[in-house]
Length: 394
Image (cartoon, rainbow, N blue to C red):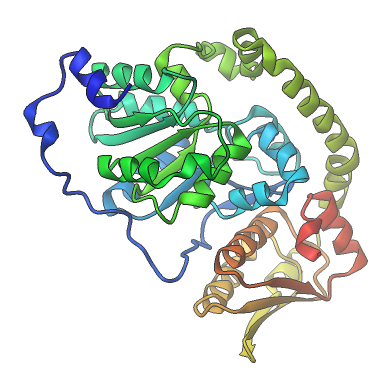
């Protein structure tokens, strides 16, 4: 069912809908852009933006208004588990422009390692807020969901006449990434010129599809939001707010989709292993925080030559003394090159420093250049492993 058929069915289509779309596509740059000043923390191997939902909504609207790319990822426990098993999937999150905590278990894990301000910012809640707030309007295109769900979701959204209007929808079926990336499918999305492309595929396939096609898609905001289309279509009911706030939305999802129980069971087992093997050591290492004057005396320098840029770090690092490191990294990536980060007497790092390392790693993946860490002590290697980022040292 196309959006034209949906609008005709609910009597909302007018002649202006046939006018040519004047919106330009997303701005393209020869160099990938990464904001190294984001408040990002590493939560057991994944980057998490620690921002309130109001800030997240602002970022989406700004990207839409400026026509700049915002690849939004919404990690939950399933993302965390999948990232251990699939480096390509993990890289899709590391290369995101915004990575928000969709799952309550990630909030618990974040607080356990000292990220006190972390809060759940679910993709479904983001979409509900965009629909409800009418001060600004955003056009969306639904790609995926169950058969017929995208058309029903389009009818629901347009009937609300709220802050979101659906300009197109399609159901790609269950083919391979390549089969779901045919030029006619991409051309249809671009012809509709949405501000926000919402993909509703399984986590791994959705992230892979976006990575495969993002350079051809003109929509500025793109994201795989899983069940959003089915929620909007009414084919699946979302948990009541009190269930969400109590942290039991996963139980409600099993009630609505019994087939999910196995996935949640497997993810729960992995969470239990994670708590024993990684979270406990991580908490122990946090207790060995150096004296304050060592953080104040920490230094950073940047040296370039022979196609490689070296960032030398001396002294412990935490969120309080990261500003010079952010500036050094921004300077280092100004010209695409291989980067080496050298540790000199670095005996302590926190989740904010590791989150910055993940941003740098993701940037290097996007540019096709390498990132290496040198001079990492055996103690720091254990810290990296406890935080599930030993892959940075490979």
